[in-house]
Image (cartoon, rainbow, N blue to C red; front, top):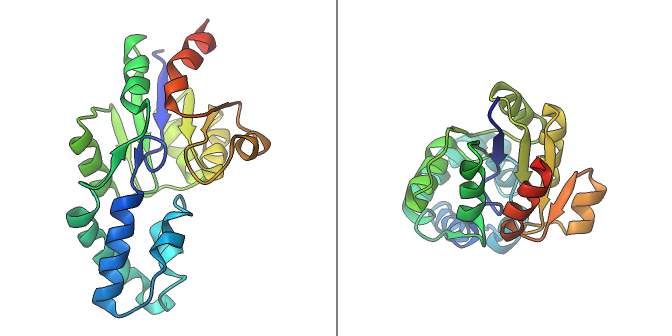
Length: 201
């Protein structure tokens, strides 16, 4: 069976914070509701509705989430940046005949917009998943490895029986990722090709 590697999107492959910050600021202005966008982007990972619940009453969260997703397509995609080594990490998987997945908590159509903007072709994209639910998609696609920046990504890999690779480009330090059970921890994805070579040998 071909090697299959899954990657998280936000703060693993892409620094989406600039665009997300802008989107929250536009949403706040439009709704007249205060949102601390700096705080919001400091805790990316859980589903959007979890964050919005900090700022909006429960009966408004779903409608506001729909509006956020509309604004996101306009304001967030072009403002996102490739994290160091992201494209090289994907190329390293391809170089050994592997398959590449992106499993993310982001709404799937917006995740697809990011991949298209980056010119990143993947074998499968699954959105709207978080923590252990990522494990469902990883198992379905036969993932051997899952790479992410969040403790929830470690939990997802564990749930799928995949090798959990943490990258310290998000809200958690290398020590925190290791303590959460990551099988390997990288400073960033520039270290991934070397790790993959060692893992396969």
